[in-house]
Length: 517
Image (cartoon, rainbow, N blue to C red; front, top):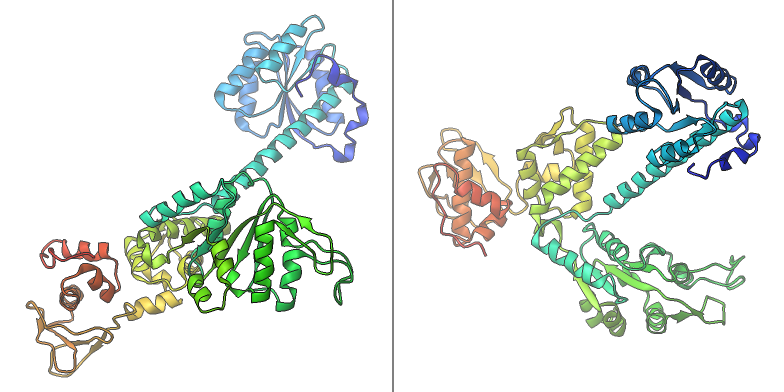
């Protein structure tokens, strides 16, 4: 609304029809009773709710009660001027638009007010039509500004959702590779298990490139019917096949000047792989049923959950296409290989889910985090996300506890123990408790808490004390792993860091000299 003096008042009075006007509560500040009456009458007839004040201190009292959408203030008032009022509003943190009232001979005051932050000005004597139009314009301007702010927040939130979470060394190395590869046109091949976030890294490549404002098109090669893959890639002409009632653009054409993500590229037929290779080399193709070559400028990012080099060696994937796709190969590690990232991922998923359902969640307990880090996560980050979402929905407490994680494959595996070590207590009348361990080599007992291992491979305990049983299991795992902490941690189903903490805890001096690799 910052325009040269007088220009805003030449607009037609019906610019904002009554049905489109936004009704508002408007504070007017003027020490002249006659002006106040004109303001109140005009605003009321326009459908607004006017609230009057004779001075700045009185206006501040009204503002403290809240609910004011717009302020109309005289420039000259006893005490503080209108300009000082604007500065006071800014200092006190009031984000409310203000229209300034000025005299005919005080255009310099109007200019000063606009520079100070006023949204518009009106010259005296106040004309009802002029006032009504200025108010409508001011409210529309505020609506658009707030709408833009909301959209900006949504965009930032959307981008934040796409942020790659993790600070492990392997993730840092991948992000460094992404940042170096993104500005180029080089084809990137992302390999990793399902659920590791390959699409997220593909998005990061696009967002950090010069193509960030151009299309990002995703094509899942595994989800398309076999007969439609070629049409999905290159499009088709009208009448190209039964059901082709109009010309359709394919993924390459829609991704022109942008990025095309070929998800699960290993599922593509060999004959289509040859056509894809030609497009990658020449950046040119023809629609199905067409004869005219179409030039495109597309950056390719491909993903697969298979070992594509091995597929090429076995003849199930073209070697020449593999070499063309793997200009920059990136291996996305499974979640079990970066357990240090699990706490921050879990917290992010918990906070996001809590915000979506309007629930107060403060975080996860240390026991819950340790339990999450001990699980191998065959479904990777996607599985972790679903487990945390379920826990947030079902937990009655602000802190997620281990029992809240039960009821899923994670909860079942955690209740049984680590994947490689499934202990079960055997109660024999008149005998010491025995812990039968399957899937791991039994080692001779050590310490006062264990008796020599029976012939059946079970570990005999002197009591059912949990801490004592844990200590005995750690001793046996270290012995079975030749004192290698990493292998022992794998046998126990816990992280090396957790094992180290248990070994270095109060009253424990076992395994301090063991190797960790």
